[in-house]
Image 1 (cartoon, helix red, strand yellow):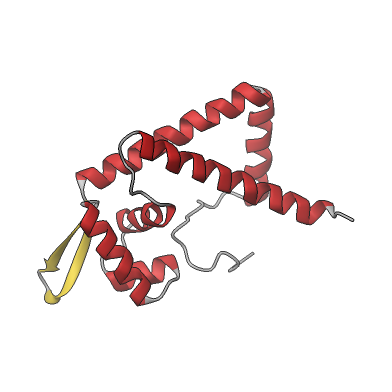
Image 2 (image 1 turned 90 degrees about the horizontal axis):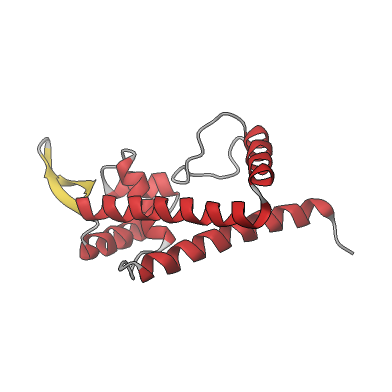
Length: 154
């Protein structure tokens, strides 16, 4: 026996996962083979103000060790820079590089292209209605994927 509520949640999750997987494959095809959703979320968090590995860990709701590993991956790929904090040389400040911004911009373009494919398949009115329903359901708050605790305030 199926239940409509859980089925809806799974459909939304599967749709999200499919879009992200398609975007990752397309980024690879466009010359960015080493971009993962985790790295993109981390670059987003850094661009939104997570300036240290500790702040990145908090923003992504992961351990400091996991954040440090992600920072290392981003640095190795040239997606971020790490420079000493002028106020405290022990602290390293993280910034997204031009390459990292290009990757993020390319990803946004790919998601726009995927949206256009949805429009072609379902029609513009259906997608507009779906987006309107989802916006109404989620409210006016900005959706931040770098925010910890997806269930907080639910």
